[in-house]
Length: 281
Image (cartoon, rainbow, N blue to C red; front, side, top):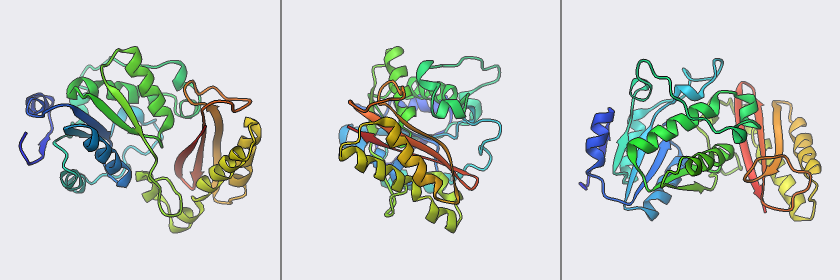
């Protein structure tokens, strides 16, 4: 493997370049506009694998008709500099035509896990996610793939898909990285006005309050959900979309938290939709 980072666009270039990358290989799939959260995945992959492959692809199939595909932030030159500084071996930046060529009609769907939470709000979202991730897996052939805990349902869905399709890939879910005031790092934070950015800390504050109550002995899931709901509702700029306290693996809503659980939330802050979660165990 040469010292300099390889950058390829087409599938044919990727297949050639992938032969130059020594294993074991860790894959970090991204939609670009990288922040410290993405780079923490790269560092984790780097610590566990000989080579790291990153992908940058804003996947149109996971955006709904009224979502922010055209406005999604992009800065490829900056992203490539950050990945080179992080000593990534290979970066693939496919076009939509590379992933979904003319006449494309094959989709990968995980059924039950995609129905609640994000799936209930964004009906075709996970079909787009699982399809593109399976294509990234097939094209890059990693030994491990790295995803962030912030997209907790996505991580659960990808774990399920990987098991169901017998991919010989270990899925590694890395902790959420947060700003100093607790807000989970996200490319969408750039959409927030200064006032909305300040108000957005309510997600972290509400989840923290519920986790504290849980740690102090509250196991009633509805009471934990209500605590989060009340705190978010008290923030004028926040519009709560859902709060969930669910089984960590199945995402089924709980009555009592007596095993590993996912406490998650989706909130509109103005026009910007934010998600966050804590693990209870």
